[in-house]
Length: 405
Image (cartoon, rainbow, N blue to C red; front, top):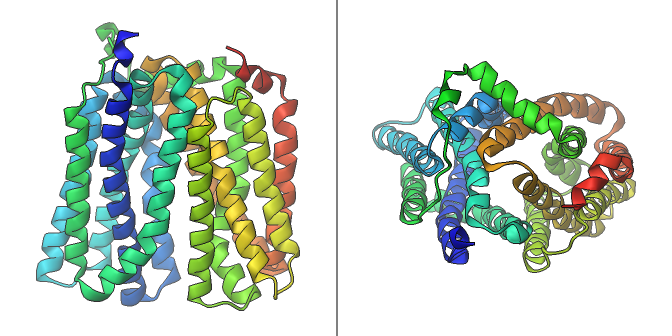
């Protein structure tokens, strides 16, 4: 089709800018964690910083999805990047003149998070307008690879820069990254959707409901979303427990924590590249099921290890990372393939809200039980629950039908 002419050049131009922005943002995020830890030494402050990171997506996601579907997604992506850049610039200027108060850092993190809440669904909704349907899974794999690289690079680079530079200099790098990302989007010709202006007469609630109805009407995707939400409810809190199991159960040090993070990110990179190279595999539900099963099995093995089994735990972390792109990347491609482009902004915002809302409840539950039964036992129980989720996934008839055109 004519609209897919030079699609590789367009897609990789946008993602080159996204790669720069993703890495600089990850470096700044780590530097801010270092700053808050050094300034306050408070676990509560760090928890609040994490909360403001996903709260806008969880609360405002459905409304943001309406705007993404109403208006030019290219302008939304550029505007979101520039908002993130402006927030960082203000923080850098303040940091130049004074020591940053914690509340200002929190406000800026919140504004950046709002920008990301606009940018992410817009980017996912734009991709099917640029990329042929049979290439969506492969491109999702490449996108996961970029994210993995940022996870690998950012901790080490942030630690190095934070030790030799002021925080405002690191913020300036992130501002430049956001500007580069917006410029690459500006240079690419992105097809515009024809939006029926009559729909603007609907109120926001009506349009949000319309997005939910479109998602609910596709019974397979809706069932996959519910299973994915349950999966995130069980798994996402585990991320917060990696340092705890490493240091308290395996008697490790901060260096050992870094090793587990690098192992996870390296596995994720390998998985993303594999998905990029072999993304034309037709049995996507099998890939998702195996991915969830590998995650669950790795957690079970981790929970059964003795305190001397840190090396095997590192291997398990790499296997967990390897499994991630085959779940999130494949699921993203399925949504892009099955949902009409004019609804994708709302649908991706809704799915992001579902996932984000599952996280705090899972964190509360995992924190409660991990303290009482031991973090290694909670890894084991989480793994068993996730294996159960993997078993249920292919048993749902509507989910199995997603592999058919």
